[in-house]
Length: 221
Image (cartoon, rainbow, N blue to C red):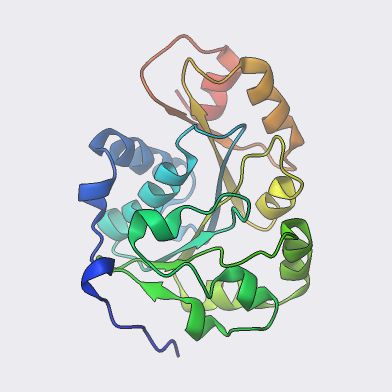
């Protein structure tokens, strides 16, 4: 059983006040395409940085609460540039890194938010993020999270330029590739999608634009 930390004033985060409504609605539609209320694990990634990946991960977790009344765990796996503690006013550590290294247990790293979500931040990676992912694959930590929460939504690093992004994506049943419409070069999108073991769903983040047919097919548009 998880012993929840008290929800302090600083942790009274609400999705509606933090995530743009258009992203929430786009994620609501995307969620239906990848399992909705039966989804158990989702990796949210992108080709490069600054595509809105973390905002989409937040929104996908928030949709699980709003649309399906489930209890999601938002898991930060971007050890290179963690941002959730700043955005959600939670503790930076202990987090996933400490959990993997055996320096903390799951009960010590989970941080409940006021709207029904729970977050585990990246923690202090110590300069060896790829090794942490390998150790996570060899442990039962992710299975324990899946047992205790309805769904795990992971905020991954971008696939290109990361030594562990693809490995992390392979840990989850579904992958959502965030693309900033009209900004991300198409060759980079193609390269990122091809690096994954399974074909991802593509979520177009931003204003409407003319995109290649293969991108529209992946995104369901």
